[in-house]
Image 1 (cartoon, rainbow, N blue to C red):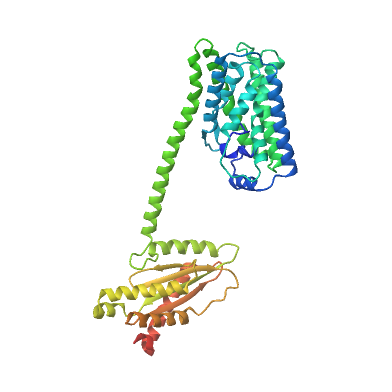
Image 2 (tube, rainbow, N blue to C red; image 1 turned 90 degrees about the vertical axis):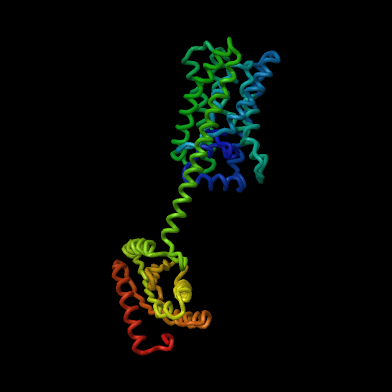
Length: 431
């Protein structure tokens, strides 16, 4: 059907069920756990009393019925419940194909039964196992979801056509309009109570009512055909079965797309990782440099910090201790840089013996002495692995609006200067 009770998961929040804008799921969750306001309770009681009162009044107009009518009513309730619980999501909101079934209830059952039968179908279809803190309020809202049937039944009663399938087209159209007016008005009232602006509800309501307007003639034609061919009532399930098939196909495509996206993400991540150290590689580093360049150019005036490290004695280690020891040396330098870098920094192996660290900071960041911290960690690593672990370091800062690539070049130059100075001075860490 339409807004009231259109979404199975929204049954406890009539009016909000038409909302599929960003943040709607959070709104529904909040409404389910928060205490209803005074106006919320008042509107729930008011809608439920209108529905129950309308059902009782129209039942007084009903005459005697045969067992065929009871059997048909049971069948229509079953199909209605199935349709109520079969929703098809769309860009502006999900829809259910209960409109043809409601039309059949109005025109095929004894006059006056339709509101009560719709109410039964809504209550069964909207039954949920969720542990709600306010069950009475929830139950009242579910009753209010059946109000959409009162409009067309009232119009047909007023004009005296009742369930006459030969009624003038103008009256039939007016009955559908009455359903839309009652349904839309109720949704707007519930939305106002919950603080949802009408503009936010306009597009989902228009989509819902358009679907109902297209499905209603199908139900009417089925009822007219079933007067001579009762088996035609079976066709009421056709739109629901179609939606289930579309739903299954959509879900299959969604899962396939998710698998492709996951596989692509895994391949992309693997393509950006260095297999020896598990750090990022040159490709990921280049992307990070591009992103950092955008960050430092923004009005927030962020700066970029670049650290370049060049592993010492890698060739000597490979030649004297073997390539396994050289691999350990590279891995240890990677661990050292990961330890000194912030958690959100890009730490990458840029080449055979070259590493880079890149991250952005806000104004006022106090630059620590990365070299001192790194040297201390390298000395510990030397004692742990049993052979020298050291690297030349260069640090550069890219100010807001500056060139990150230039900062990378300056850091690389500083690392080269550091390596040359340490060779000349023969620092203990190099021996």
